[in-house]
Figure 1: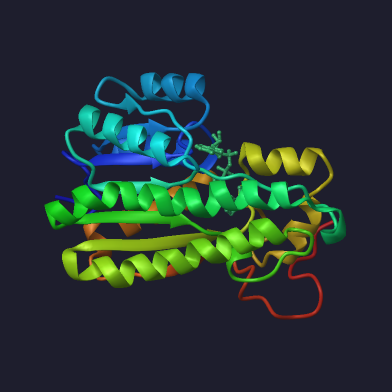
Figure 2: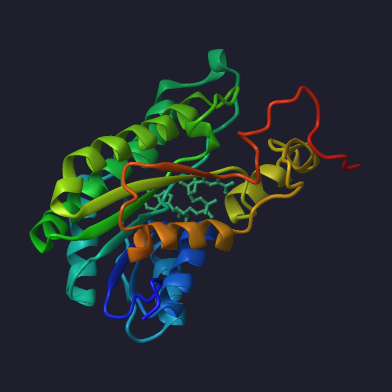
Amino acid sequence: MSGLDFSGKGVLITGGASGIGRASATLFAAQGAAVAISDIDEGKTREVARDLGNRHVAAPGDVSNEESVANIVATARAGLGRIDVLINCAGVSDTFAPTLEQSVAHWQRIIDINLTGTYLTCRAVAADMLEQGEGAIVNISSIAGLVGLPYRNAYTASKHGVAGVTKSLASEWGQYGVRVNAVSPAYVATPMVKTLIASGRVDEKAIQRRTPMGRLATPEEIGNVMMFLASPLASYVNGTVIPIDGGYTGYGAAGAAVDID
Ligand SMILES: NC(=O)c1ccc[n+]([C@@H]2O[C@H](COP(=O)([O-])OP(=O)(O)OC[C@H]3O[C@@H](n4cnc5c(N)ncnc54)[C@H](O)[C@@H]3O)[C@@H](O)[C@H]2O)c1
């Protein structure tokens, strides 16, 4: 049996209707998992679950709402039989407005979805996992959880928070067989980033120049590491936040890392 064989395992993926979550769902399904797709976009949630095939289920809902999270987990548990893995991909970007022009409502919304949503979903699956005596949770932080991005206060704070709550939960639950880790991607070619590039808020060429590998990541390159962290291959990995950034946060020289026109 391969260490990446998820046959007989139930995997709940939030933000599963798009981008990194959707790519991860396809990767886990290909390794035999039964996947519960969850997303606030109910139509796309059902479409992605249907496209994945018969053993997979749709569990739509809003991760920032406690009652909705309870429904997501109950639907996933009923459809999958059990939840062995939680992959937390639901998240939103921010406005890139100068700090003095930002609203507190905007700040609160980003924190509610990215940080409180992660906390709520971890908490909601934990009761089952602790009773089972095993489970793996992988959260999504960001390079914005490792360094500061100007204009992006709420996003940066939410992703530092995701790294923090990951380490805290890992410290509490590790002794009961439940591992909690996070990944910190740099820029990934998903609908979220394509929208930022199209609106001029992210300069794709500048990102490529600043990245030692000279390109953005694919969603599958993030999903593969999340799958590794959820697998028995990572059985002693707990409380880590792993950058998946083509060398972005390791790069320290003053100018561009790569010569790209
Ligand atoms: N794309 C990147 O470059 C990048 C880099 C680092 C971290 N991330 C993080 O990865 C995660 C996925 O991003 P992506 O690029 O795949 O984005 P995406 O927009 O393609 O997918 C995010 C999904 O989350 C869903 N979602 C939003 N709010 C929700 C809510 N309240 N409840 C449930 N679902 C909700 C959206 O409907 C969407 O389907 C996010 O947390 C993002 O911050 C992305």
